Length: 342
Ligand code: FAD
Image 1 (cartoon, helix red, strand yellow):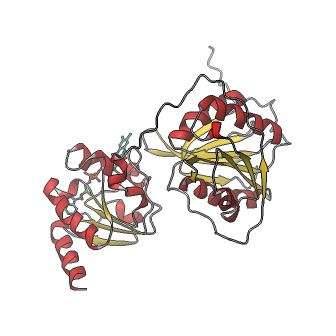
Image 2 (cartoon, rainbow, N blue to C red):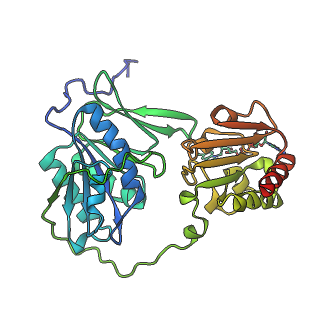
Image 3 (cartoon, rainbow, N blue to C red):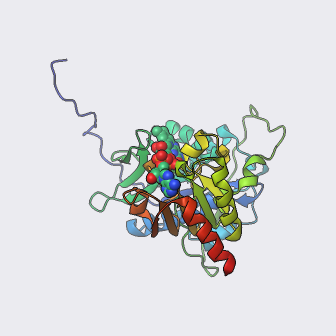
């Protein structure tokens, strides 16, 4: 009250020492392990190697693909093989993961920022009384302290914040799908599968029916190898015709910036970015998109980025592999014609 500056960090608390290893939660749906699990193994392997520790996966429910987790980089899999775990049960999942963490004390725990991860991982963090950084787009080890640097967009995507949990373990983060790259696949890789005794469900949650969400399947943006994306510079809904033509020629699909979606030129399912989808195609062609940070966080890990923009100073050119300065209305038909000619 007298103007003193209070350092909120509790300096008395020391970093717990007996926590070791990097864990990833491998979610599955109807026995199929989600792609994000393999992406988490990719980054998890890197972090574990830097910390000179082991990488473990946790798998709940029944899956024939459990060995795949080892081939994609896990040293061990903690496997709760029980029909009670096939569908997400927040209470059961969080209780079981908390028990595993208390028994084995991992230093880092990663999960997908998916409907499943977003639902039960905060409960795990709350039960363990540790922090959680949601929706990370980058993870690194601080060389000096060994702490996990958890990087994510903040303040509406205007800055990239680096968050650290120096005094609590495990350090828990959820990671957006399609941001991290898969690691190396080695079919000869050997690891250990540890069967874990399932807990009893409380019975308070009952799955009555499973209904597939088909609206997302139609667009299939996240699996596309080529995405031709349009922004405000496309000029209107009719401008998207050329984008579809180019996408079809290249065997891809069409994405959009939020500006184009907000204008009502294309449905939200096509939106790429912070409040849309995160994509990682082999080729991303950005047409009439300025390159706002909220758009970039959704597509910057694409292998090749081609930007077409009439403004040579548009920020999209800072991350583009190839840039074309010009009017999309002129460039796109030329590009389509050239590809059609072979
Ligand atoms: P603009 O920024 O208006 O850029 C249009 C570009 O087109 C300009 O660079 C211009 O030079 C170029 N151009 C114009 N005419 C032509 C032409 N004829 N030929 C070639 N180039 C031309 N945005 C997203 O995309 N995805 C998100 O998920 C997202 N989430 C957000 C979340 C929050 C909390 C906030 C605050 C914003 C979010 N945004 C998101 C919005 C983002 O900040 C930008 O406003 C948006 O990405 C801009 O879209 P744009 O590049 O299409 O339009």
